[in-house]
Structures are given as C-alpha cells and as structure tokens.
Image 1: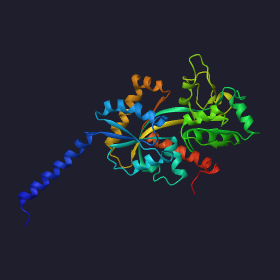
Image 2: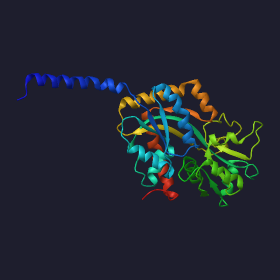
Image 3: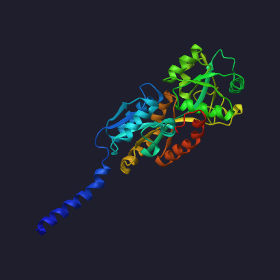
Image 4: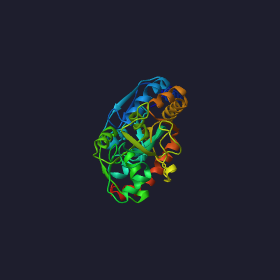
Length: 323
C-alpha cells in the first residue's frame, strides 16, 4: 500500500524537477562546446571556425574547442554531427556547399533536415582568376574563348562552393570547361600558376594576399560575383558591370544536430549576432578578407532550401546529382 507520506514526497520531488528544468536550460552552457570543422586546417572553413571560437568563448563563458574532421568534401564531419547527441555541446561550421549541395550528390548520412540552423556568420563573393600573362583581360574575354575552346579550371575540390559557383555560371552562359580537382584553393592556385589549368574559381578571400602593396601580382582577377565592388579588391569589376547578371557568394554558418534545445540555439545565435555587430570582430574578419553576414536560424534555413533547389538542375547537368 502506498502511504500518503510517500505520495507527498513523490509529488514534491516531481515539482522540484519541473521547476528546475527551465533554470537548468537557462544555465547553458555549463561545459565546453565542441565545434566540428568538416575540413582540414588552413582552409576558409577552418579559418572561420578559429576566428569565431575565441570571442564566442568569451560570450558563452565556456571553452569552444575546434575539432577538424575532414573527408568527403565536408560530408564526414557533418555526418558525425548529425549522429551526435542534440544537447547543444557539439556544433559545426557548415557552408553553402556542404549543407545545400553535398547531400544531393551522394549518400552522406545527412540532409539539411538533420540540422538545426543556428546562425550564418560570414560570406565572400565568388570570383575567377587567370595568370597575369593570360590573353584574357576580362570575364567577357574568357566566356568568348570558352565558346570555341575547351579550357580547364580548378578550385577547392569537386562540389566545393567555388566549383559549384563556376559550374552555375558556365551553365548560364551555355559553355563548358573541364574541372581539374584540387584538395584546396592553395593547390588550385599552384595549378593555375604552373599552367596546368587555364583559370581558377575561388572565394574572394583567396585573392587579395596574392597582390603586393603596389598592386603587382602573378594573377589577374577577372571578376567578382558581388552586388557592388568589393572593398578588398576595389579595382576588380563585378560580373554585372561586365554584362553578366550573376551574384554568388560562399558563406559559412553554425549548425547543430536537429532537436537541440531552443535555449542553446537562442544563446549561441544571439552571441554570434552580438559578435558580428561588434567593431573588434569586424576588424578581425577584415584581416582575413571575410564579410560579416549574420542571419538568424530561420533566415539561414530559408537560404539553404533556396540554394538546394537552385543547384539541383546544375548538378544533374554536370553528372553529380545522385540517382
């Protein structure tokens, strides 16, 4: 027989747990947060993670530990995130290519619904470069050449943001070129400078460091797919200035496993928003040629879904869409 005294004890314990629930959630985080980078050290994704980890630690009051898990064009690290406990203590850096395009290409172990979007952080315009001794002086020159020649190009890997940006542009112009794979933009740049490929597709942040203070360089940037001239390369015309109505950026943001507590999402997202609005963090981004570009969880989700639908027919045309 259950005694009245025991019932009272049980009821009191239950009420204590219920009342403690919100308080515990509001204490997030109470231990280190691990941030998965689904690429090796040194690339743009890794740079973004390391740029934001230290100031995010200050905002959250807990260590933010960067963990590189490269493989399969970002799919390995994000698949690992999708299988992680959704408690807010493991997050990752995702991008336009890893979140929108990669799941359409092969069995990755995740899709966009596997994640809770938290915050877009930065973006950079897509661009195209040739060697300084190239005969092509403009983007129009390159497109005209592609109408009669089968040229080669490289970038930071098959189905990376730069590869897909150029694939979409070439498809719009009704021309084709042969993509030569590279494991990183740095490797692609070596192939460009050695003459192994004719042009390079890359995020804008890869180009400014190739110029001396006097503006001399071994490369010529033909154009950037930005809405206006980019402050870091003000002499480079946009695609639109050259008659090509094309805008394309590569962006990076923070994601967590689906089902993560709302309190964790709100805490991290608001911390990122404060950072991106802060002058000190913006100056730090400028050192690496990144543009601050915060989006909240809902806006980031909408962008991923829009890009998925936009890239699907292009992946199909170039033979990368999964059956």
